Image 1 (cartoon, one colour):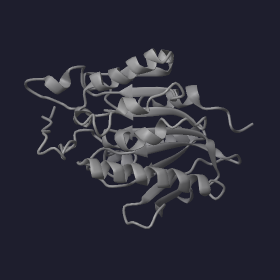
Image 2 (tube, one colour):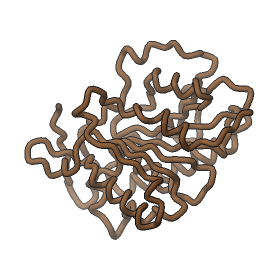
Image 3 (spheres, one colour):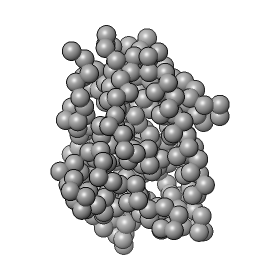
Image 4 (cartoon, one colour):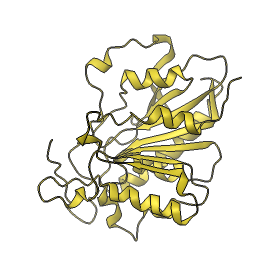
Length: 265
């Protein structure tokens, strides 16, 4: 297990850390057995070089629900074939989107939030072209990706069916309450949320291997769901790094099936 080296270098830097999210697929999972005609890489959703997405379309005569994925700091939009295949098999299209590849300051996070708004609107505007059901979406993100997806994900919107977050809301983002707190966006209409963490609660204060991806940060959100009377809509699993299956997507298909509306007769 690698030691995660994270620190605050100034009042601005707050997510600067080595990438320990296992965000990228292994070489074996990159061996493409997906249908080439249903994949489009590097589709621009804006005018900046960073503003692109990859689309893994599910084959369907009906518009397909969408799972959006945003990677952790230092990652890429590359997705493991196995989870793409599993989601495509149940009729769900996967969109992995890019913004700033790392976010380390409030200004960079705000740029990411703006990119998220632009990206989601682009998808809505182009839904017919890509055979997408924009009334049936799941928003996912790992560490950095959870932050950039957070505000849009909690916008009162019946089309957002759920949030799937891995190593979400690292401890450093809670250090600037006068700027932003993730709890500010949670509301009684927030969608079902599924948190997955690699480490155990309290990992941020571990004297040997501290990890800012502390499940206690997700527990704060679960408790807020409870205070709003929607506790049943929040799930949190931690310590998967101590099990024989550390795949961050291992609960995703079941979660998707539990929250999506049937969109195809």
